[in-house]
Length: 108
Length: 261
Image 1 (cartoon, rainbow over the protein chains, first blue to last red):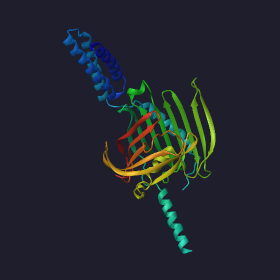
Image 2: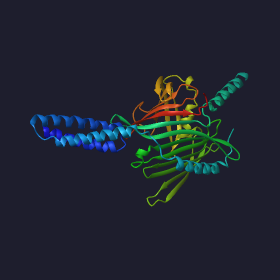
Image 3: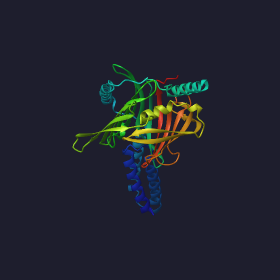
């Protein structure tokens, strides 16, 4: 039983770390919560059976790191990085469009 | 005879008043957040803006209607979107004269241009694509269109210009949209009038459903919805869409330069 929860904890922690690095937002909380639950169950079983819990403690550290990364990513404001490039591109498009529109007479 | 002339003028005035732009002014800017639904969690993907501005040529003044979609910087290293759709229209009637669409999506590039000739009911189309070696190739074609065929940008602004306050709940209207050189019928149905909370306050809105008569881009029945404020500006504040790869939504963040204060 302890072994199964450790394996589930490892899988969830890896998934939590991957999702917390990628910009998927709140979805990373799903493996974080799962990893926490599995690790805590494994920790309790280990204590009960008097077995080593060092691996579980490492997992919990990684889960906290994933949690921190997710909260940091969510709290960052959404920005678009296109200002200067976009303005010059837009000006070029407008100039091209004016050339295209020069020959047109708007129908009233 | 007098009755016929009278009826003719009533119809003419009604038609002209329908065709007049009462909603869209130059300088309007609407900003939206586009989110994608991943297993029930909405993830912010991109910023979408709808902007209007005046463009002058030596003979005329056009109203430029521009949509822009850019992924947030956090997504740029994985999948960058840099798209724009724009239409140059008659500021009084919203009749389109020039339409441009450029999409840059994760390395995929496509450019479309339509030069509308309303008198001849035709469109000169240019499609530009990028080869794998980085060079471009153009495909030119001439298309015959119907009297009320518009591009997608003008259609969305045209809907904002409709007298929705006079439409009954359940009523629908179909518009012909020229997209990728194909004329597609898009049906808009007024489903309800409801009040929703948005980032620009609580708004009473017209809830419209969008469906395509042909084509299967949009999925589901009444799954593609748009909420327009039930005021003189009729600004889109929320849109929900369902496509083959999932569903998402567009939420308004800010609205400036509106015609009616």
